[in-house]
Structures are given as structure tokens and as C-alpha cells.
Length: 319
Image 1 (tube, helix red, strand yellow):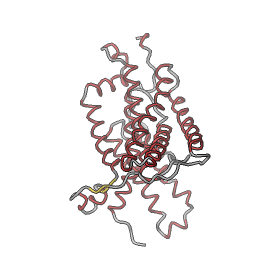
Image 2 (image 1 turned 45 degrees about the vertical axis):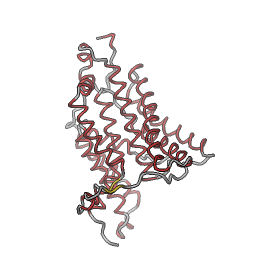
Image 3 (image 1 turned 180 degrees about the vertical axis):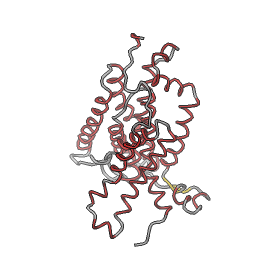
Image 4 (image 1 turned 45 degrees about the horizontal axis):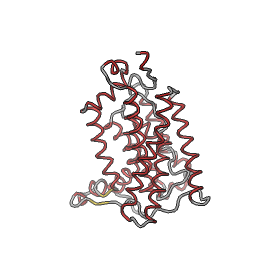
């Protein structure tokens, strides 16, 4: 077989990176506000499920090109609703945030599988989506060697992810809202003293994480798998958490880490195309992204400083 081109490898890397970028950005909003969100995996599952169901019924109704965007909107809504469960438990009732996020993961996996079987007559997966996103080549830029093929001939969600990285950075570091959000994650009592509604800001942070993680899940359904099943989201939420930590809770850093992890998934796929890979057990090849995640996280220990009040419930009455 012919060797793949650098442009193809870059393009595939971005395809796998896109969902991680959205979800890592969502995690940043939540954890910058002081709320640990282990439930990003489950929120991606909710988003993938919502987008698959909404897109299928939209295409059945003859909405054509609008169908995947309706799926994205559905993913945002169900992602926010799922995140509200985590917000109520961890912010209002001050439950352990790690346990609450873990419950979200189990709840998402079980409930969506049940609903898929209920909606589609016992089938373990949703019907094939024929109106998902298609790649869009930007005129002139897509003709640039390597970069054009790799970057400027991508899915709309990939372009949207690039834009959201810049928007998130601007919002967090250049706006009063971003300052308040970071303040409640670092020194909530001081922020409260200055009139910032700590609990409200934390709710907003968690809900934004649900919306973005929902889009991350939808991205996988609408560009890669074209269906939803119990294994559609297979650890990407945890990899996104690793990208967020390795990126030091900074949108630009998380973007770079997400691209690195996307590259590891692209390499995993391309390795299987070579004849020599047939001598390697397939399980070892599929382990590549997760092994790299563990290695990167181990190297990040002690180097990444989390928000000072991350994971600590706040009680305004005890200020």
C-alpha cells in the first residue's frame, strides 16, 4: 500500500481532536469555577445520544442539511440538563464532586442505552444517520500543500472548535465574566465579599461544561460513527480531562494537548493499515491513545496547578 500523506494524517488528527477540544473547553469552564467534573464522559454520551436521535428524526422529516445542526442543538440541551444533575448535587447539596461526576457517567451509559432500545424497538443502536456533517473545503486555502489538505478541508465542527478556543480564551482572560469565574474557583469567599454570586457562577460554569461536552459527543456521532451505540463514546471524555489537566486549565494549552491525543488516535488507525501490524495483537494497537494519556498525565503531576478551591464546596452562610 502507498504511504499516507502528511496532509491526510493531519486531517485525521483534527477529526479525532475536535470532540476532545470541545469537551476539554467545557471542563475548563467547570473546573475554573471550582467544580470538578469527572462526568465529562457521561455528558459526551448524553450529547452523542441526543444528536443521533434528533438528527435521525429530522432527516426523516425531510429537513436535509439542517438535520445535523438540529442534532447539535439537541446535544447542547441534553448536555446542559445532564450537567444540572451534577450541579445540583455538588453545588447545592455539596455532595462529593468526584462521586457525583462518576454517577453521571454511569447514569448516562445506562439511561441512553435503555432509551435507544425503547425508541428504536429494542435495537441496541440508533439507525444510520445519512444527513451528518460533510467536509467543507475553504476556497484557495484548501489548495495549500499539506496544510490545505490537513486543516482547510475539514468538518464544520472542526472550524467551530478552532473558533471556540479563541472565544474561550478571550472570555476567561479578557472579560469581567471570566474574571469572576476564575475568582470563584480560586478564592470564593473573597469573590463573595466583592459581591460575586459564587453559587450562580459555579452553576453557569458547570452548565457550560455540559453544553460543550454535549457538542463534543455530537461531533463523534455526526462525523465519525453516523450512529449511537453503547460504545460510541469509549473513553474520550477521560482523555479530554487529561488534555485539560495537561493544558493547565488554559484553553490554548488544552487545545494543544487535545491535538496531541487526536494524533495518537490517528496513528492507531493508520498503524492497522500496514502489513507488519498484523503481527501485533489488535488490543495493543487500540491501547495506544490510553497508554499515551497515562504517560502524559504522569508527566504532568506536580507541574499543573489546579484552581485553588477546586473540589471544595462553598457555603455563603459561613463566609
